[in-house]
Each structure stands twice: as C-alpha cells, then as structure tokens.
Image (cartoon, rainbow, N blue to C red; front, top):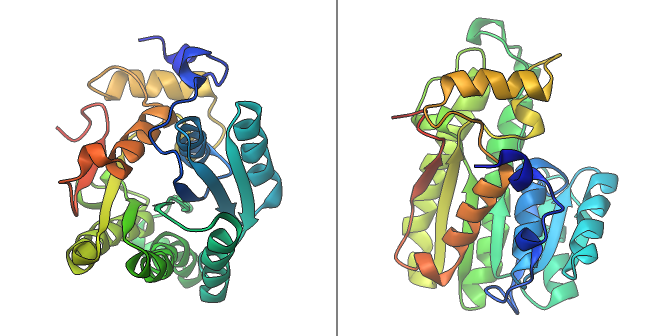
Length: 269
C-alpha cells in the first residue's frame, strides 16, 4: 500500500465528492488536526455539512479552508469541551446555523505527559480526565438532548486500544480515560437506542497523527518504529480511522450499537 499517497491530501481520487451524507450536519470536536481534521474532510467529501470545533481558531479555520477548497461545506466554532456552557453553546450554534445535528464525532483529546502512575500530579490527572472523559460526557449529553427530540442520530466517541485492549505504560491517565469512554459508550448506547440514537466508539492503535510522535522523533523514525512493532508492517493513517467513523455513522452499520471498533493493524491480536 502506498502510505504516502494515502496520507497526502492532494490525491484526486481520494477527494471526489459523493452523496452518502447529503443533507446531514456533522459535528467533529478536535477538528483542527490529525484524525479530527481527516474525518471532517471525509464527511464533507461525502456531502455532509461539517462543523469543526476545538479550542484554537486558527487550525479550525484551516480545516474549513481545506473543506471548501474541495467543494464541501464547513464552518468552525471555537469551544472548550470541558466546559458545560461552551458545549451547550456549541450544539445550539450548530443547530441554529445549519438547521440540525445528525452525526457527532467526539474526538477531542490529549495524551498527557509520559509518567508512571506514582509520578503523575493532580493537575495533570485532572486535565486529562477533563478533556478526554468529561469532554466526551458533556458532548454526548447535549448532542443526545437535541437528537432525542429530533428523530435520532449517530454518535461516535474516540476511545483507544490503550483503554481496554492493551496496557499503556507511562500513560496511565490517558488509558484510564479511554477505558472509561468505552464503558460510557456502551452504557449510553443501551440507554438511547430506543430514541433512535446509535452510539459507538473507535479505538485506534498507532496512527500517523501528531499525538503518536515521541518528543524529538521525526516522522521517518516513527514510521520505522511502527514498521517493526505493528503486525501489518506500517503505521496507520488518519484517513483509515476516518473511514471507520463514517461507516459507523452511515446506514451501512445500522445494526451496530455500543461497539468499540479496533483499528490497529493487528497490534492487539
């Protein structure tokens, strides 16, 4: 597989517009980079109106610029998912601006500083919990409130193989939040499927995104590291996670509820 071609945002065949999500409004938190940006571009390429949300305006604006350059429809909203009032405003703005909210990808997250459990301070622990777990809960809470009144929808949460599938030495706070996201996803899925809301999660392994780079590591060094440790023989691509998210959001997965989809090249086998 030509990894460079797939990860390059210029391939023509990769950016042809299709209609699978026409007339759907999609919210992507953490939409300014990495998997969030790739997923926002993928939804827009398939006809959705996409709202990219995050804490920094500049990367969100770049995501929207990329969407529009390819003939898609997108907008950006600055919001902090750890703040309930921000999330309320975010959902209300999406609905007011675009007429509804049909799909949400709760992707915003942080890895945290590599430390053993005994060395993590309370401030670091609280920050990781706030963004990765409380942020997903708040996002779901207010997305569900709208969707349950308006015919349902689809929600996909960002978990990780380092939650319930594999240990994560030096990243205990991150692992704890991702395990909790998987559990929260299953519980919410069972609670709200009767309202027509399908809730699932994705659990990526090593992905070609900023979060997977070690301090001081080059992209070439990262690629070599994963070539040796991933059974498939390469690092995964953000576009491959995006494809899984789109599938879980689509009618093609209509019988999938409360699932945590592992995307890891065989790491957890």
